[in-house]
Image (cartoon, rainbow over all chains, first blue to last red):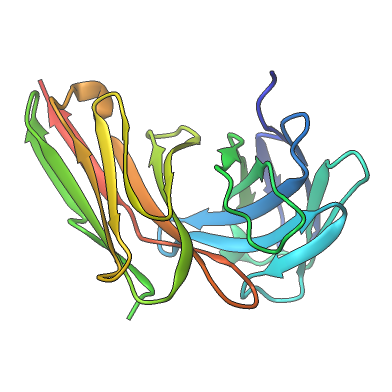
Length: 117
Length: 110
C-alpha cells in the first residue's frame, strides 16, 4: 500500500506570493490533517478534514486554508506569504470514524519544505 | 505553560542503555501519540495510547491518565534509535485538536 504522498517536496517562494501544497492519503483513509513544523515553534496543528469537511482548525491566520476532495486528497493554501511561513509542512492521514474524535494512528508524509524569501 | 511538556529536551546515551522520555500534559485527553522523527526525515507514529501500556519490539509506552503523564522507554538502545521523539495529545472537548510537545533529541553513541 502506498504511503502518504506530499508534493512538491521543496518550494521557494517570494513574500506576498501564494502557494498550494498537495497531500494524497493512504488508500481508504478519509481523514487528512496538516501541520507546520519550525525550529522555534515545533509542530503545530493547522487543520483536519474528514469526508470533505473541515473538522478542526488550529490557531493560524485566515491566510492558511485548505480543502479536501471527494477522493480524500487534500490541498492547503497559504496566501500573501510572509518570511515566517518558511517551514516544513506535513500532512497525515488516518482511518477515522464518523465521530469528531479521531483516535486512529497517524501516517505522515515526508513533508513539503517551503522557503519564503 | 505549554499544554504538553516533554523531558528531557536532549538525551545522550551509550549503546545498550535503557532510555526513558517523559511527557506531561495539562488537558483532558482522548489519546496520546508518541512519534519519531529522524534528522531530515519524515515522522513515524510509534504508539497511540488512551490507557495502560503498549509494547513494540524494544519500545514500551505507558500512560497514567490520573496523573496526566506518559513515558516512552527504549530498552537496549542502539545508534539507529537516535532521533527526535515527540509526544502529542488529542484533547477531549469540542475540537479534539492535536497538541505537540517540543520533542526530545536522543543521541545514542556506539
